[in-house]
Length: 229
Image 1 (cartoon, rainbow, N blue to C red):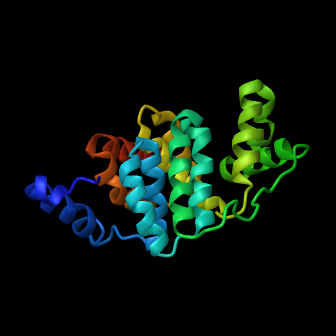
Image 2 (image 1 turned 180 degrees about the vertical axis):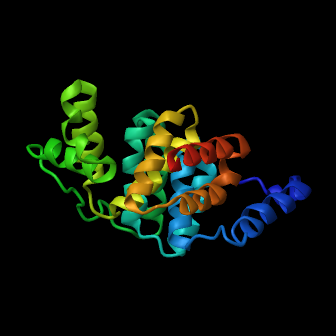
């Protein structure tokens, strides 16, 4: 049975709910559209392993217009940044919530590559984000080949989310798990290359701060500043 925190921790709930759902959401100059905010928060909760809060936010996101396909794509892409060991519980939770809402699974196919062209198309996606030099990066070792074919070829080429949205959720995965500052800086630059500018990324961090706390949020801000330089 779900504990009623309003009964057990009323003072905490008053301040936490006010900060998270009123103050942060409505901070002048830091607002995001509901769709973008929910995508960022769901990705952040995956990154910090906040599965209980994820369940609650996913319901709110679906009620607010996020599509089941978009929700599933966030979970799928998380595997490359968090690992299947950390993502599988979130996939199970997502399936349970969608099924309870009457959504028929599996959802319509979103695969954008074949087993034969996934490396080529993945390298192209890397180049679209980071620059033409990335077309050859896969040749420098088997992990970089996997990165091109698997991370970018298998996931970034899928439907349901566009490239800007995919780079934004990757930024959230990395910021939320911490310890990935070099990659976070690189993906902050990748976001900027696609038009997710410094102001946008600061707004993303601001909206996700209640879910990951101040240290990782401030680290993310530093990475954005470095990328902007």
